[in-house]
Every structure is written in structure tokens, then in C-alpha cells.
Figure (cartoon, rainbow, N blue to C red):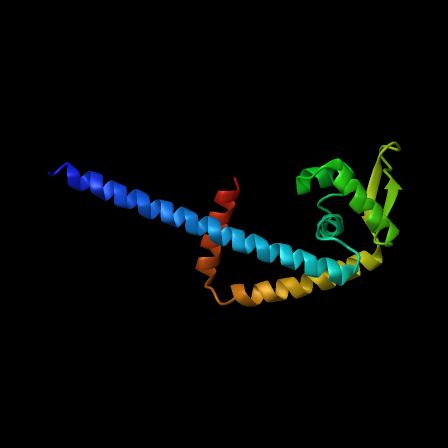
Amino acid sequence: MSDAAPANDDALEGAALDDAVHRVERELGRLFARIRVGWREAAATVHPDLQPLGYQVLAAIVSGHANTAGALIERLQTDKSAVSRQVRQLTELGLVDSIRDPDDHRARRLVATDLAVERVTAARAVYEGRLGERLRRWSAADLDRVAGLLDELGR
């Protein structure tokens, strides 16, 4: 009978772990849904015709994290046609300029206009204000732990 107890404990521990994994998956799903809503709201702040992916493209350009179509594709993990459509729309809206790369005249660089920088900054301020308000309720130690766990999960 002594062998049955550890096996039973293992089964209970396994079930508890499965439940915890499902809860994390559910909460990540809720978080991602909130992030998508935030992107939609930010896109509308920048321009009423801008889609959430267009906002992500523009934010990557404004932040300097990506300034070529290839870099955007890599950063956003999306396909070339989607990025091309968004860049075309951003250009038509006066939010992005496409200029020749001074180092490689065959390549194009994407540069945010002053209007884009102003509007993305305003959209980010709203989002970061809401997020910051919630996160400031936690201790620095809790925030460090969450950041570390998210970093580990993302690897």
C-alpha cells in the first residue's frame, strides 16, 4: 500500500499542474485579447482608417525597431504582402515616407513623419498610462518576478 500513496500523490500533483497550465493559457488568452483591443484603440487614435497591424507597423518604425520591409516582417512575424499593404496605406495617410537607403541605393528605408511620431506618442501615452496605473499597484519585487517569468516563457 505504501506504493499506492506516492502514485496517488503524483497523480494529484499532475492534475494540479495541468489545471495551473490551463489557467495560465486562459489568462494569456485574456491578456492577448486586451492587447488586441489596445492596438485597435491606438490605431484609431492615430487615424480612423488604420488597422491594428498598421499601428504595429507604424509603432515599429517610430520606435526605430524596424525601418525596412524585411525588418518589419521579421519583427512582426507576418507575411510580405500584409506589410506591403500596411506600408502603402501608411504612406498614403502621410504617416510614413519611403526613402532611398543612403548606403544601398537599391534598398528603401521607412521613416515616420512628424505627424506619425506625434500621434503614436499620444496613443502610447494613453495605453502606458492605463498599464502603468495597474502595474504600480504591485511591488517592485513582484514586477521583477513577472518580467523574469515572461522573459523565460518567451524564450
